[in-house]
Image (cartoon, rainbow, N blue to C red; front, top):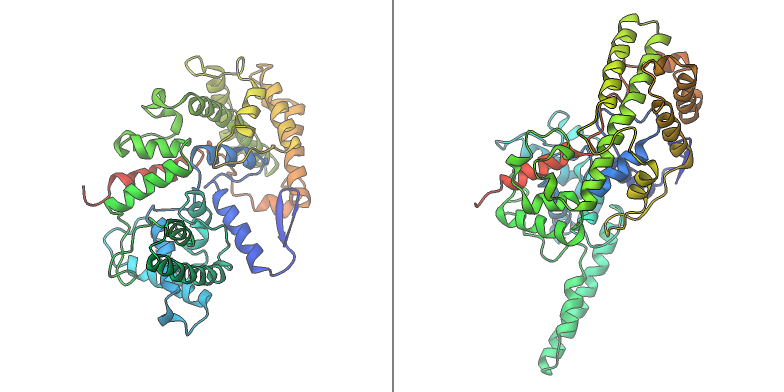
Length: 425
């Protein structure tokens, strides 16, 4: 069980199932090098989910979407039943590290540095995505998996007997066959593991696996940009692109995706200035003149960039905040339920935008804008605010959340590369 308070998560007991669910959630909403000091993570993550569902920034390679189900199926084998299922799967995942380290491609291997001491296993990182992509058909936690798998095994055996009985009577058994096929945690079309798996493995997906992934994305996330790019583009058209809105095929995306990307780009630019200002204020408080000057220079350059967006879809004069909220909150897609962004978060964005619309190049010197940033961070961090807690300020590394938002594009790009590089062409 967890308690949410001021955008933080605190454990109040040792419920393993609750812990798994929260870790799975956090694995999706973890933007690398972009700490959520000003509480805009819900916006960033919502846009990321709409564009690239089932992904997270700590996912590495596409083939883990196969490794995880294959290992869980391996753990179900009777020959391994002398141990507890959770011990079996833990051992299999840790053994996989050593196996992959013997392959030619080590880029993205979980545990490449820490080895068997790895704290976060791939299954917890990919579990939610497996369900989002329809590879995992049953909505169960990792701790629930083996009980559910056992129950489904019994059901399949019962249906198999029913099918045999119907066949002997020359009766129609198609409905029973469908039920049997559906009595599985994993999609029935999941490709089989290589014969020597898990004793031998590499990160290169096969042609059959590539076709399966594309089909799953088409069926379960068909309106997403990820599904479109997987189906319609080659990796070469994406490899040198730093952000999804700069993709050369942008004009071929559907209108709703184009609109979402336009909003995502402007929000990325807009909020970047708030984080630069936050760090400048911390540098001043730390009496770090060099860092303070550096952030002041970056703020000036950022302000000029914001003012000169003539070639872009949105600028300060024509970006509608109402349209933005409507686009990200109420867009109806099968893979993401409509949400409501926290009211205080909305008020912060509205206040920040209002200040910038005054078009004062010295905006960052105003007391109002400094109060806005400080109070926002204090509201989120409470007693741990760097503006009021000396120890917290000392832990500031000189840069918090200063990278522009890219909404998990780097993960999506790697997955597209894996699809493009598959074997058997």
